[in-house]
Image 1: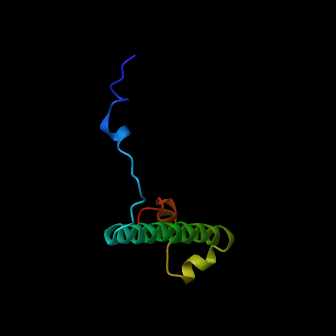
Image 2 (image 1 turned 90 degrees about the vertical axis):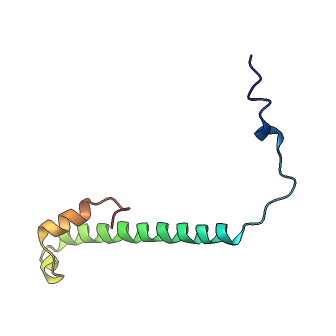
Length: 81
């Protein structure tokens, strides 16, 4: 058996103490949380729009959208605006 992977430097390097997150990594985490929250809002909005179009289609006109616009919005994946 080949022991090439077993002798790789990444396996011998162990962190002795936990690394404190830097300000940059905190900002990245905050940005990631913000993106995930926006995705959740879009998903929820599209689900509610779909429910409205099924249960109360007359309300679609009240919010100023056409049936085609509603269908296009509902069809979008959550990551698209």
